Image 1 (cartoon, rainbow, N blue to C red):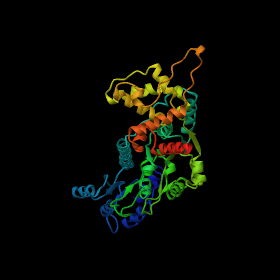
Image 2 (image 1 turned 90 degrees about the vertical axis):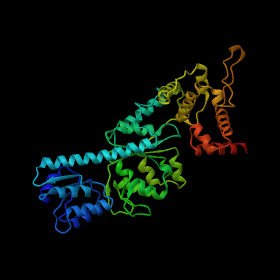
Image 3 (image 1 turned 30 degrees about the vertical axis):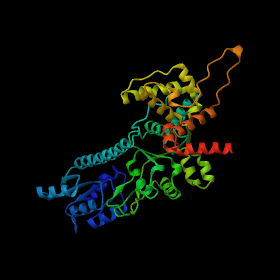
Image 4 (image 1 turned 45 degrees about the horizontal axis):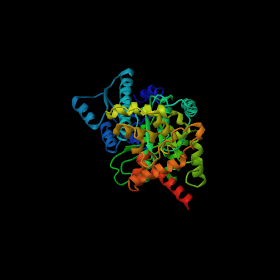
Length: 439
């Protein structure tokens, strides 16, 4: 029976390993991660049900099909209580075992998909990408072209650009347009992971691997199988974890913390950073070999100030999207208001524009003076005979706006950064630059 199953499944599965006893099977399970186990109940020595109980107690969460030639109702109940996914009587046809396997693997796929969806909802991330980026500017056209070309190949992609330029949206678009679109998209923000738990989050851990590890846990690489793993803020990853990630990218295998298992992974990596990684490499804060491994394809997302001609379309899109979500009436942006917005430098990029639209919807109108206290109104056009009006200094406008927001929240940089739609680090860097210039 073991030989028959091995020959039958070898051409249908990625890898098939066989064991003649529960003890031999336990050794294999300690070395490999199996998506599916087929266990005979009547084995020499320990029974299949006993082995199944032990595996479940150790945290094995994979699918298990039990087979037997001597079954009664009590045996079936005992098997289900031990954690069997299915129960098949011998002799059986090939179609029976293949059908049972298909159901088990589909159940496993749905479990991974549900995990990804719950995680996406809990973090309030977009579940699916927009049908392309908003805007018809040359910068957006170039970005769209680059994303279409990169999506068609399995290579690792590095997305670079300032905070708020839409790097996660670009990663979603890459996934949706790729052959992996049917697989999961698993985003993870490296900056929010505790340094002590990064390996566990990414690669999983075995039961008892560290204090508090009461059961086996799968990592995000496992849940991204067949799909895309999006590593946001990759520049925040500690050097030790950079070395581990490099090894995974080269070997395409992961090892859960505290385990000897080597688990093959079929995952496409898309990484993103708002830091200039080349400078981080020169400063010794990022591994050169990992940088070149990630930079197979690099796509830079343009800041909003580089394609301001897309402002009207972006603003209208956010109004049309957010108004129904908030249950509020949409508002119109006048030509004068748009002229004002066109002069602003948008340090928080598209995210800041979205925040502006949301606040305006809540207030019932776009009131520039109320939302941006302390800023001067847009200069009105003057008659040619009187001379042209001096253009607004964008850097001064940006500085005045940021400082006014800081003042309105009593100097709280965390709150100010949230209102501006930029990271606290970006805000602190701008303030440091202004202090240095003043001295």
